[in-house]
Picture 1: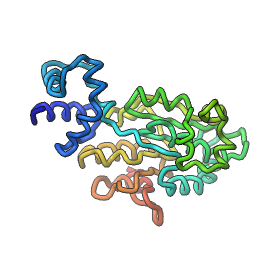
Picture 2: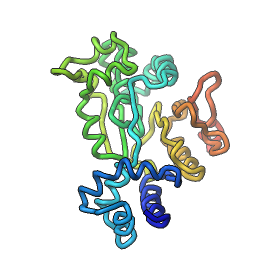
Picture 3: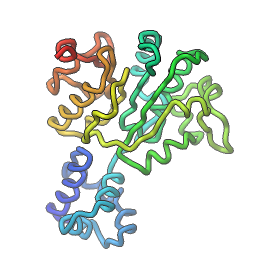
Length: 274
């Protein structure tokens, strides 16, 4: 594969997802695109690069992006954001306007562990109350991964990664050798294909947004673009959770760190008022 052919594939991935593939990531193409070559009857990565350069092919471009998107997840991953959410949920629930739902967005939700972890915390905070409507939106760029996530079924290995035994017993039902999320939690979560680079305005406002370990794949201008779009989707008292290696500093002044909390950001009062 020539540098030009690598650049063609990397360009498609960047244009469609914002993910930047540098030359040191060439090994990812070798390890992840094999099934794509077989599916589209292409002899090599060089042939793939040439086809992408010759003419637009929506199905092929989509398949390439999905194959090169990382889908690593676990329940209550990197605990701190979930600890903070559990702490503020009583306030978020009590401060709702009459009839307004509690709205939480899990962006780049991968295989579903994050939105279902959020649903468990919300269920625990509600304690059986029926007077609070809950909407958890779980989005990802990959239709294939969303199909899996929406089933709410996890292997023994997956539930052993970060899920306390108490939560497993309380919120899951055994389904053969696997575990299925309880129907009342599944009902809280709506899965939807969504690209963070597209217009997000129709999604409305959210009390909290989880967008963790996504920005690390973007260049600085794309990070700024996404962060400012997310800030516009937050309610004035809302919280945005980023990954431990991510920050808003130097990228946008619409969001400010929440004192004493790692990876948690609120909307700047000056920008909220603007």
